[in-house]
Image 1: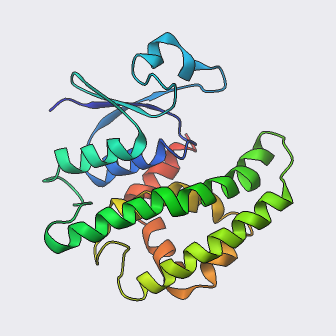
Image 2: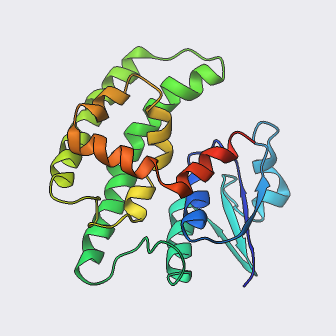
Image 3: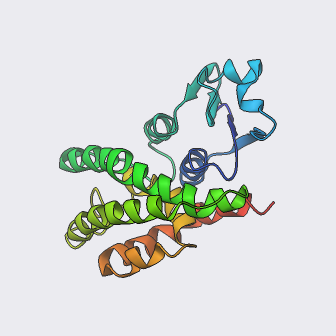
Length: 213
């Protein structure tokens, strides 16, 4: 079996789910760091992997993939017999498809804006915009109310097993848990328990460890 090559960045919220997926599947992979500060993601070499010039990109044999969620779906299906299942069969497949879309279109746009304002702007010496934070905290509250209702009925978002729908939340959750936004998760008991559960997975711990190397 060909060893996957992941071109990405350890702090990138798009790269982190790919690392997590590979670790969940107990798959060996070669990490090839892309120095975005130096513009390597816009180089001719990287553009041959992802013409949009964004991390991550995955090489498996002669296959070249980009777009984080497409990569994790490919890994989950291609290596279905290895490690954590991550997908659902039968009736549970429908809610998996729904909650993957919810993460992408309801949670991620809001959470990403908050991560940018509260974590990455300060990291880059820029000033946080309180109005943007306030607006998106209000939006996040509405999303998390729906999550609280769902998680009162199901241990995880799609079913009673950890899947891609949960895993895709982890990068933004990781960053937001270090900000005042954490209170919005903690104040909803089912959401808070779910965050604690998925954040403590061994595979995710390996992803975080990559940032400290």
